[in-house]
View (tube, rainbow, N blue to C red):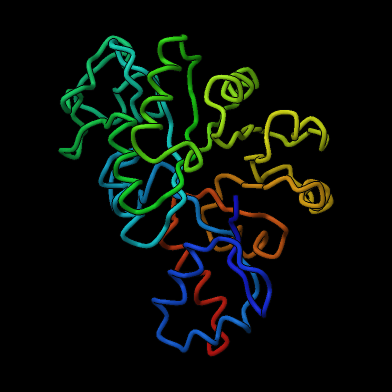
Length: 271
């Protein structure tokens, strides 16, 4: 999967993001040849600068801003339907209370505090299809066999397997995805990055790792072994400036729209 925005006559990764930059900048597109490559923005739980996390409004905000890599979290409701929610309980984002596995999310059944609803995963995938977005889908719980089948159907009926990365902190989930939904991209989410290249690649081609303990040598080793590296959660200019020149493919951020604007300005030879 291609991530980075390119410059100066190099091959073009992150085609969608690069095209958005070029089409929406005030300066001539030729200015891109002076820019340094930057990691692509990955909208952590959507464009949360403009709407509540993990809602259709948040993902629409990201898509409208040209951010076409989305990250979200998955639990399952009482019917085994995949729903987009970070916490096992709905209390933090909904006027309802309780564990989502005891609630019914179909037909907009779980309201959010901002007047939206907790969306099903299928709803977000359908929206992603409108924006040609790639969706990083983090499993928060272990799916049953029936839930794996429903997840595969949600993908196949909407954006297709190549537009989905299945990822998790749990190695088992990533390995199961390879067997049960082949054709999706797989990624391990990791807190420390204390992994060899072979360990990373045994789970999949993408590593999503917390930025805190990272070293440049570490990232270079993964990059040289064709591991695509995402870092989370990078939310301010200090962190963007620190990591923007490292061989990192994407910034998972709560401020994807602001980061995209910052990156565009940083790339602008006239500013």
